Each structure stands twice: as structure tokens, then as C-alpha cells.
Image (cartoon, rainbow, N blue to C red):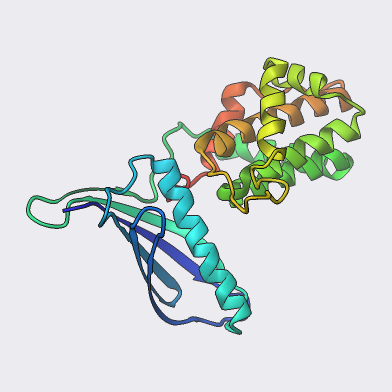
Amino acid sequence: MSDVVVNVFRFSNARGYFVPGLNIEYRERDTGQLWQINCAGTRGYLLRFGIDSPVKDDLDEQASDSHFMVQRITCALLIGGAGLFGAEAVGRLLLKGIEGDITWSSHLDRPDPFALPSDEVVTGSVLDWYQALCQHTILRRAIYDAYLALSHPHEALVFVYRGLEWLKAGQHLTWEDIARDLKVPIKEIKDFTKHANHETGVRHASLSGRKVRPHFETYGTWVCGLLDAVNAARGRLESTFTPMTAEAVGNAVAKAVPLTPYP
């Protein structure tokens, strides 16, 4: 028997409304795969069955699909008069086979894999960056876009791109300068901008109506790149500033990701 992916979401509403009871069955036209959706209160369970064909093995694509599906639910809740809801991914189960010998794995909250610095070090770093954000508008704008990228993993590239544009415009830089700040070849920057702009549905609507599936690189790697560029910008603005190491930036991003992206 085919595989099952169970995506778990938590719904929230600022006015205290709850999601009405929803039981939805949806079959994908192009793959034949089936979604069974059950939502009520603050929880939503999205089950995907590979009935006519096995569930795709690409976990990034699977995860993106779950976010795109829950977007349809929150949009339907809005236009249907239920209210404005947020949907946060809180876990995913992968079941291999639903008869006989069943094997399964989970993507749930996990402990921080990195050794944590002391509270004093963290507090000092937070206060130092708070002062910098109060003094320099472009840093504040760019880091907030990094925050938005990590808060919305399925749309991360939109915010990473804008964050880099804040730094580029605010410092009168070129994309070649940004590439030097990130210590990457200019070709990678060109590929990045093309991926964001040209018929991918990332920053602009595509003629086909299709949207590129996000993947981990746009969520983790490019967010780290944006923060590297922020460090370079602060180094230009403050002669006494010592930029964070690549490891420190990576640890900061890792701590901001409490679970496997796109669960």
C-alpha cells in the first residue's frame, strides 16, 4: 500500500475565533494523490495519500505542498467569513505503507543541536544589536526581512531579496558589491535574482499561474547570506564593529528554526 504524509498545523486568530469544523477531500488532478483535510478549533491535520502513485520522495517539495494547501484553507476562512487566521506548522509524520509492516518517522520540535553561549553573552549581543537597529535604518529594515523570511519559510526568497535590496540601495552598492560581501561568485547572485524574478511566481506573478517550489537553500542558506550582508553593512557604518563569524551567523539562524522547515 502507498505512503501517507500527515502534516499538522496550529491555527491562531487575534480575536479569539476558532476554525469551524472542516472535513475536505481533495484529489490532485495531475498526480492522482489524495488529500484528506480535517480542521477544527486550533488544529488542522492534512493527510496526503499516494493512491494512484507513490508520494513523492522529495521532502522539500512535499513540505512546500503542505504549506500551499494550508494557504488555501486560510484564504477560504478569510473570504468565507470565518476570520483572519495564521497557520503554523507544528509537525509532520511520514508513514511508509498503511497495511502490514508500517514504518514511520517524524519531523517535530527538536532540541537545539548547537552548544549555547551563556545568558550573559546572549544578552550582551542582543542589547548591542538593539542599539545598532535603533541607529541605522537600513540594518533594521534588512534584519526584519530576515525575520519575515524565517517566519514564512515558503515565501523566504521574497524577503531575502528585499532585505538585500535595502542594503544595496541604502549603501549605493551594486550586486557585485553584495557578492563580495557574501563572499560568493557574482554568478550565484545573478542566479539568485533570476530565480526570484523570472517566471517563478516568487516576486512577480507568472503567466502560467504556477509558483516555484521553495527549497531549504532559500530558507537557510540565503537567510544566512542576508545576515552576512547585514554584518558587512554594519562594518561600513561603525568602524569599531567586529562582524560575526559565519559560524555565529549560522548558529543564530539555527536557533531561529525550532523545527524542520516545511514540516
